[in-house]
Length: 367
Image 1 (cartoon, one colour):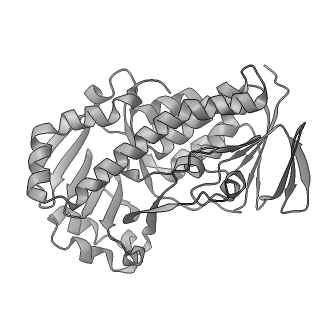
Image 2 (cartoon, helix red, strand yellow):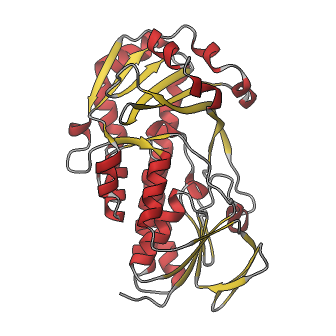
Image 3 (cartoon, helix red, strand yellow):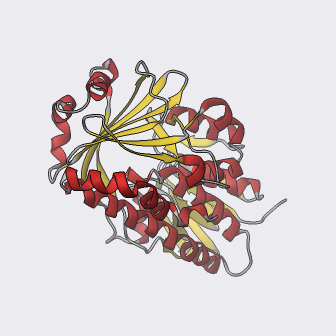
């Protein structure tokens, strides 16, 4: 199938590679550029059912089957390791997809292997000029090009977002986080979270004998991430303290958690997707899911009928309610971090399954 559209994708993270793949498979002419010469290593991922569904539609089913660890239960514990609830993933995601854990590196390499295009690395956009016939693009290496559409998939600190809406920025979500992958010496076989007051520690199997660990701290001061990680969790269960003694902790990826909430997303024929459009707190684990869903819906919309600007607006209108749902649910979950642990723990013991069904209800429907 051929298509006369030409599209530039800016950014070669999950959103950008997914968009380039989805568009290329529909016969669209695609160029993809990435300003970094080398991709950051990343850590691990928990992929809920809708993420697995979207990745499978993109062609990653065999990679998930071969390299990801099935996650059949989400186990909620208090900071001492006492069980609050078990959430059955087969029940929560029935008919959608089997949630899995995997390393970020393996997902990205699978996406790259699945991509039938070459990424131009070390190159980014220097300037954009729109005309009636499309978008003229000047690149940082001195070259230029003409495209019908430019897709900004350049992450939470997107340069393209400044073009779409110069007033749109990021909002600090009140948390800092640490992420690392280590040996699964404890034999943890389910998604397992320990909940403190303003502190959370998560462990997710991501393959044979490997464990993705994520820790976060609620704080008004993002500089708190520079403090020694183990200090914040010294009162937690011994399994958490043992994991924080792993050598990989010294190389943990540390960052402030930021949101992007501006709904503009589009200016003329420039459109934002993924974190560039709607970065969210990670506690709904929807970063990959929203990015790949964006890619699939964008490709479907662009290959529809009507003027190009209308197709892009149809995409925006279709995706905005779903991504806003994720952000709203993430904020609601984040708001419980300051709750008295005794109250929160009682609520989770009684109603965790209902809360999960409510939070993920909309996401069980196809995007």
